Image (cartoon, rainbow, N blue to C red; front, side):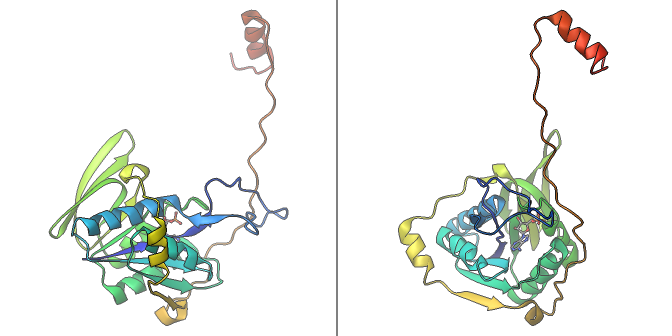
Length: 249
Ligand code: AMP
């Protein structure tokens, strides 16, 4: 079974994100970029399925600017077999990504797509669901456990207040949650080996998709700064402040 793993290049999770002065987005110039952490988990899961003999090939896909090659190389160093870069300067929104992935699925015919539940840059949490809908495939989102048995994927999902287990007929889309696994670090020999693995580059037009944004970003703003707290000398003073100033009791 072939597994397709979409991997997004995002601002590194350790970076303190800053809003651009004109409020049109977040600052990315000179900022460290990395693979979206949930996508690392998705790659790890695919590699484990290959190690178990369930998967035969892992294809890592990234969509965006030429530098997304680096993100694909990271996936290749973790154990993916080859990469596809869908190169565009256009700012990609989930529907465009889902349509491009749909076209790649038609071309590559994977038995499973494993992706992150959410990209940590714009927190859309939409692409996996949209892709499953476009393909008409079953989806197992927020997976914390995945088992494949023949033509069925059993997915344990993290839902409010507990876990839900669903059985999906393959082919299917699975989105990875935090507890699915702990991704490995790529070893130096594997980083060297990854340099020789193939990355094919295609453009959205080659896939017959118009990736133009459908949503307009109106503005981006920093969260309101928290006001400094005050110390009170006694419980009586606290109660008086809550009653007379905050007016909450
Ligand atoms: P989102 O719906 O934007 O929160 O993203 C959910 C998942 O879709 C991510 O974790 C990735 O696996 C995938 N994805 C979204 N955008 C891209 C992209 N530009 N390139 C590769 N994968 C992407």
